[in-house]
Amino acid sequence: MSMEDIAHWELPPRIIRAATEANLRSCHSILTLSVGDIQRKTNLSLSDSKLLTMIASKKVLGTGSLYHSALQLLRREDCRPAAIRKVISCGCPLLDRFLRGGILVPSLTEIVGESSSGKTQFCLQLCLAVQLPSDLGGLHGGAVYICTEGSFPTKRLHQMIPFFEKRLAQHHLDPIKFSDNVFIEHAMTIEELQDIMEDTLPKLLSRGNIRLVIIDSIAALFRSEFDFKEAAQRATRLHKFGRQLIRYGSEYNTGFICVNQVSDSMNSRTFDIQQGERNIVRSVVPALGLAWSNVVNIRLILSRCEYLYNSIINDTNAESNESHPDLVSQLPVIRKIKVLLAPHLRTSESYFLVDGLGIKGIENVTAFIVSQMPKLKSDRDITNMADQTNELMQQDHNNEN
Image 1 (tube, rainbow, N blue to C red):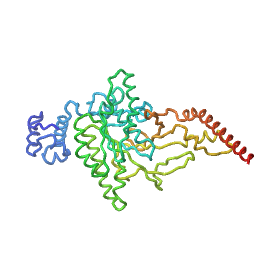
Image 2 (spheres, helix red, strand yellow):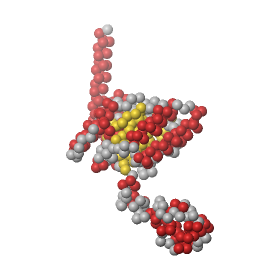
Image 3 (tube, rainbow, N blue to C red):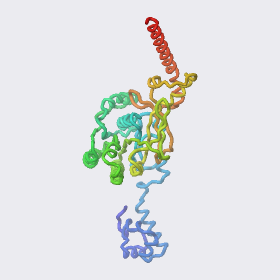
Image 4 (cartoon, one colour):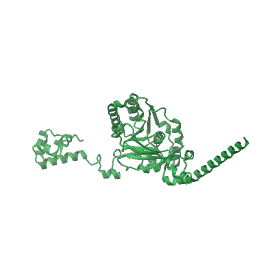
């Protein structure tokens, strides 16, 4: 706020004199009071008190360069760069379209899911995508990856790099040393994690080139170091930790992603996931409870969807109605990403695959499943031939005996 003394404002002398005697000499002291409070303190008329408030407001707003209307922000017209929320591309046009550009920055995003649902794969791809230039959806910055569950998957990261190098080459852009811009830390206890947050991380963020921080995972530490009787202490610690992440994000204009696990629940307010070739439905809820849920800005949940192949298998074997998990295991695993919480997105879901080069969205999951039918039938024929051959060999063996 402007700290210019009221004596220099273009106001009638009586208003300046009354405000000065009431010790209302700055914008801050005036705008922290209501018009009624100003009227009582200065003994000015209602119209004079409103005039004093209006002039103070104009002093703060100035030409309007520091403040923007909601419409300006929506249209991104005449806005300061710092006022516009940025996004990090997911490295896939389909997923970017689903998430309206990607991951918001600054924000605290939570990625939830069971083991092997694709959480770490998603995070690794974001570590590379954030380094891309803005024309390709990146922020031209580095990433910090904090591991709490074992070692960092370096080999997998290097497998995904060629895809991004190819994108740069296609657009005739300078190459990037992707692996040099991912800073890895390990924390096996909450105390180690807090040391990173209070010492190492601020030093990295202060360099100005870190645009993404990933903690994989937040649940691993807070679930293991607190028992059921310490739920209140854990909730307090989690809330404080989450607020620290949000403060860093706002201060350094950096996005934070926390990977979380799921817990089985009998409560009706849960997220149902369907598993395996038999379409088993389980009710799960993100771990760490309500205290953590109230801190995150965006919540995405990932799950595996092998059950989607069931209809094809049943159609090709309608008479016997048997399950063929061996066939399903030979097909690409379809995974689902669902928006559970986001201020800018509706609750919706999309599907994706994980291949050797990273995560790829599926534009039409039904069409994709249908495209797998020839392979499914082929594998099915091979399986039947193998079964028939084994039966003949067994019959021959029995005849010889």
